[in-house]
Amino acid sequence: MSETTSQLTQAHFANGKLSGEGPLKDGQHHGPWRFWHANRKPKAAGEYLNGQLEWWRENG
Image 1 (cartoon, rainbow, N blue to C red):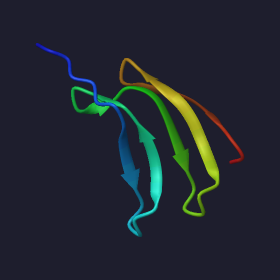
Image 2 (spheres, rainbow, N blue to C red; image 1 turned 180 degrees about the horizontal axis):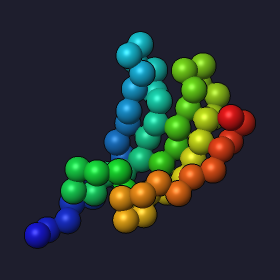
Image 3 (cartoon, rainbow, N blue to C red; image 1 turned 30 degrees about the vertical axis):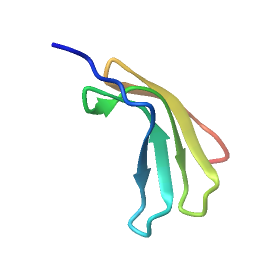
Image 4 (cartoon, helix red, strand yellow; image 1 turned 90 degrees about the horizontal axis):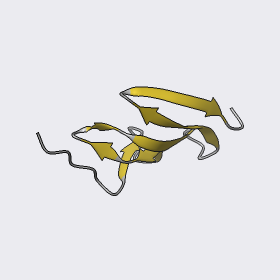
């Protein structure tokens, strides 16, 4: 099975504002990700390892 990693993937709230961004690997979150509240203030950041998110809060 080949592994495919994208450069950067973005997730958005229903209103179109950015809610998170990070890479995907084989269609799943992989590596460093950052997340924001709807008001664009930082919510959390962390890294997906082996399908699990290891995270810490920022200003949340």
